[in-house]
Amino acid sequence: MERSKKAQYKFTKEELRELLYDYNKEKGALPFDRPKKVSIWDETLRDGEQTPGVFLTLDEKIKIASFLDEIGADKIAAGFPAISQGELEIVKKISHLGLSNASILGIARPKESDIEACLKCDLDEIVLFMPISDLHLKIMNITKQQQIDMIQKAFDCAKNHGLKFNWVSEDGTRAKPEHLLQVQQLAIDNGASSIILGDTVGILQPDTTIYLIEKMKTELKRWDRAKTALGIHTHNDFGQAVANTLAAVYHGATLPHVCVNGYGERAGNAAFEEVVTNLEGMGIKTGINLRKLTELSHLVEEIFGLPLSVHKPIVGSNAFSHESGLHIHAIVSHPIAYEPINPALVGQKRKFYLGKFSGSTSIINAIETKLKSTNLNIPRDIIKKILQDVKDLQEKSSKDEKKLVFKEIKSLMKNLQSGINDDEFFAIVQKYAKKYMKDSWVFNKKK
View (spheres, rainbow, N blue to C red):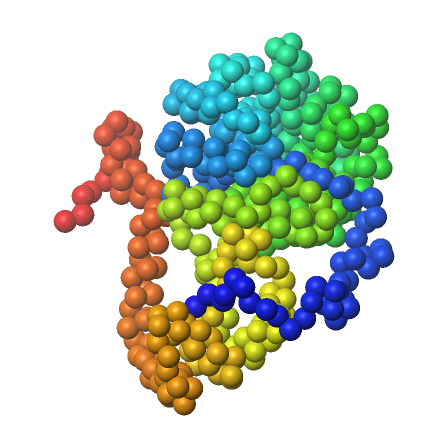
């Protein structure tokens, strides 16, 4: 049941300021010179699409891009034009949408053919990226100097074509410090619009994120951050993507990379809705219309076909839901007692649930309100009996049926997430390369 919009609470805003202490505003708790505003760089159409089992059509990408533009995203990475002609056409069509706010970006490796593919999309801005850790250099079988030469050649190519370019140091958080700094310095010296630190496998902690950001700020030379912005791209392998992104912003990064609902490869990326709500709460302007966050989340959830947890922060169905009688009693005095923000701020609604932990006069009042909305005027002693039966019903309900439903949902989720299975893959391999396969590899149809 939803609380009345015209509810009168026990405490005024002035009283609440006196009753609640905010340590986030304590002098020295956060850097005093943190940015006043940031530009949100969305990766939903690019890194988000790499979520296992997800494939986006042109129409779906247009829907998401248009909503991202409407909500206030500054940059949208639309895709990787060089990987296929189909992807090139999709990026080109998105670049021609005539969006009012967001710049459309295509990504490219430091290769002339990749940059030319971006040019065919009529893009004004591109993203150049390459893994720079020693492990990846070994995998690619190139030296650090050869990599520097490749990157410089790509910068020259982009500049010769009049392209605005951004540089991403993929796996930069596992690169040797001297090489990371050398690559970032090269980008600065070539006039990159931004340098992005990539925590590609999510191994940073907030403190080490701060350490790296401060190291770059101290040791990189001739860096005018008004011309070359600092960005951060984090992954959520250890659940730190949002925390690391926020830490980077508080220490000077102004281009946080985000994905709606935290989608992305493996454990995903920094969640759009969590990052922007946190930043706005700390007084950092994002340009995002927070009231449309839940609508955006649900749109992308449906298109991706990957249901969100009910406990998903900000946009989950339980984010502003309450059952405990003690909590609801306090919320009747003022919602801020058990909610950090008004749910309407992010396009959500407050909900009260009746169940085992329901109780107190406040719950009875809520039931009365719900019944009156249906023109029922029932005495309080009868309402108490109704409440008790509600609690008894939940306690007596069989969990066996719920467990069966749970197993069905988990099974359906596997179908949603599955790509091509091994049998399907080897059937395709056998179609073209049977003579090259060992007998033990030959695909046999299951009966």
